[in-house]
Length: 425
Picture (cartoon, one colour):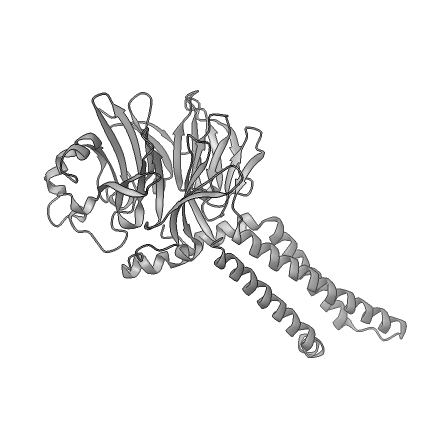
């Protein structure tokens, strides 16, 4: 039955396949040529009102597992890895390359930028807008045995690898009276450290004596397990997104004891920010949502999902809106308290591909369905009913229905694919 259908409609089916291939290759070429296939990680609203974005290409996402397995470094000055600034109209006004999967930006009071250059395992300070690197901190240059005598030469910390050894994914900055500090997260170390930034700038850099505080230890997942985005709290403690443990923790700075924990069904959370009212803004990445919780009751008081796909980080803006770096979703969103998108930057390649193919499927299925219906009508008039045609109609209706469901649930499907492809995150 199906064989007869394929033989009778060979030309139409080949045309259908050709349309699929041409349209997808064309869309892919458009996105590649315009570098419109990025993952957006940290996004910040600068003091001048523009938005600065950490990004790397979708190709690099797909290539990440290969780099990990074979320790292949990112090529110098690759245009697939960049930090750039856009104005409210989406015009790119500044751009810098020379990174490897940059994850975090902090704008300092003097206008300089602190950057967590993850794939190159370093923190750098850039003289904005001149792009000169004026300071660099690299864990591979630290003698970790001097930080803790238990971390001998055979410890993971003292054996740097070629690529993604530390996965240094965050830096925060704090003024501490007579000196300034950097709080640095090294995901693959399962540890965060506080570095005396002032001493680093005034003396030799990468001095182990300038590491004044740390929390975590490699492989001790009861403390941290591949964490993200530690921040200073107003009470002096440290809040950490303990990602693989699927929790947010508050660590007492003095005692290093965990004073507060939130889990609440989180799945790979990668950011938690203290809000002025004491509540917390949490980016719950693999649940593809951003939530606000009451810190005392731990109740969710606000939630946004929308078109989010694996969001990386969210910031509360001065106007009360939330700025979200939408990870592999390829879009930056500014969302108001009512859940309305008031500004966006970017276009989702994943969404475009899903929509394009589903629309083609629905249109072509409808064409086949129409002509099959005509055949059935003709044979019915001749009193020569053929059950084959009814089966084909059922198949086509099912095909169209599935395509419509995919259109309506593309976010969930994309998240499922992400989980399969990037289970080793």
